[in-house]
Image (cartoon, rainbow, N blue to C red; front, side):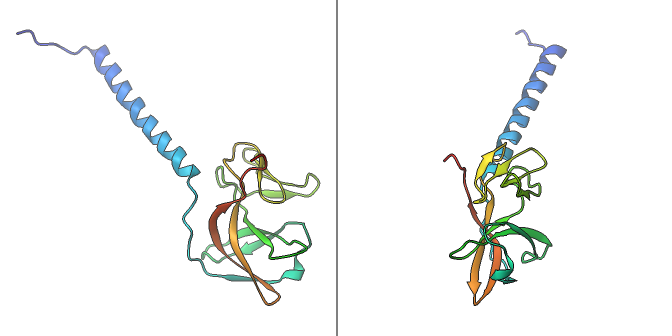
Length: 157
């Protein structure tokens, strides 16, 4: 009975194959986790003050601490109805987006994703539009809570 011996080359090829497989599973899992929306949270509501302090159709960055951590949201007041409130994190890698009025768009400084006034993705590597926050009017004040799990989608969709 002949015993088969493994060579150093064969062992190295086997280890590289196992390592490549493990890395592939890790990256696939990371990609799936990034595309999955965050779970809806029962966040504390925060009063952002009178809705009239937000200019019409022009995003205003506001401090939001409803989750217990100082964060930010963009408030876009419309002529009619409840204002739209977007999370200020890019859904690609969570960088803080900025509003550029001259270009009429939100833009992420990290990798160049862009979004229109409705929060819809218009360019760059982000998988979808900006995340919404729950918002409601209570009298003349605007109240906001955590992310709803929904996003503005893509402008081309």
